Length: 250
Image (cartoon, rainbow, N blue to C red; front, side):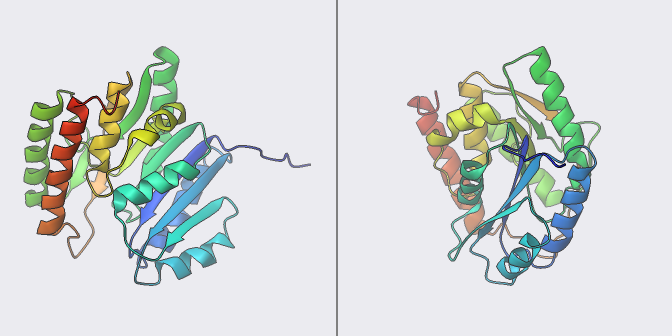
């Protein structure tokens, strides 16, 4: 006799914008990897106003995977907005945030979850494990210009926020759900700088962040980060800095 599941242990949140080429493969691969170590999970995909067939494909996937939940809206509001909507819906004890483009293989989730569980057991203040492209054991294949941009952004963040997180933007993060629920009402950034705001809020509330190796393979033919996105990310980062100085995240 199967047990009735009341609450998932692991909530995986995936923001998705125009991912019709990868979303089916991503969900199939993600479910396969999660099933290797737990059946107590939920997957929350947030369709951030896709203009292709992403939503249609996700509706079909919901009939195949019972633990898949879908949040969808018509206009594109930004990655930060999408992730925040997903986190608000999540009910697990641990949260995983992951990109839906398969640049990061879902097989790494098991290791990140184990690292976080072990770290919490040793130190209850541990709030998250995040991927770091600059870890010596990381295996990263992405264009040189992106590496330069990442290093420059890290230097700016280190000078502004004074916390030692070398890579805020890699698309795999695992968090203690209790901490995320605590800081979620403080978050407001809609775009790509959401990672900085989230990590700032976690650190300002006493949370410790562990940086872990990542395997990441750049696969997009077209870069989605336009100059407008870069400028907006910089603008949002300055806004986060000013809000932090005012004590918004404590």
